[in-house]
Amino acid sequence: MKTTNLRHLLQAIQDEMEALQLWEVEPPSAEALASKQPFCIDTLEFTQWLQWVFLPKIEALLDKNTPLPSSSNIHALAEEYFKSLTVDSAQLLVLLEKVDQLITQ
Image (cartoon, rainbow, N blue to C red; front, side):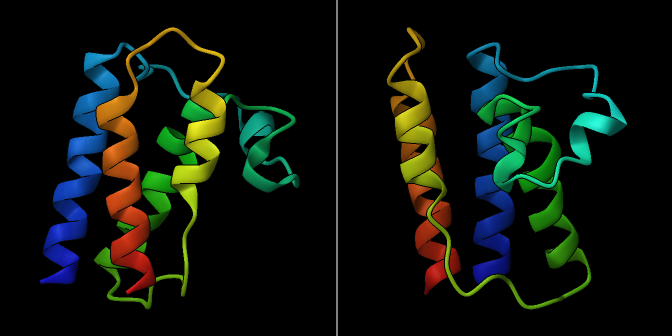
């Protein structure tokens, strides 16, 4: 059940990012994705990291039936990131908070 709910949330995040025009068609460069900094903060925007690193990593863990991280606090990062943007991120923040809750359960 947790896996199914998490998969639905990941899809809902993608859908919301697309609706907000935050979903990118072209991936960042391999160099940008290879950053050693947490969340690729030096090479990617938060939304790029979410799309190209976080979502695929969680999907891969679910696909392989590998244990998920013991905690997640993506919502706090997103909340801070979206403070400086003018997009209506309320629904996306709700979805990310639900992901944190599911992973941390």
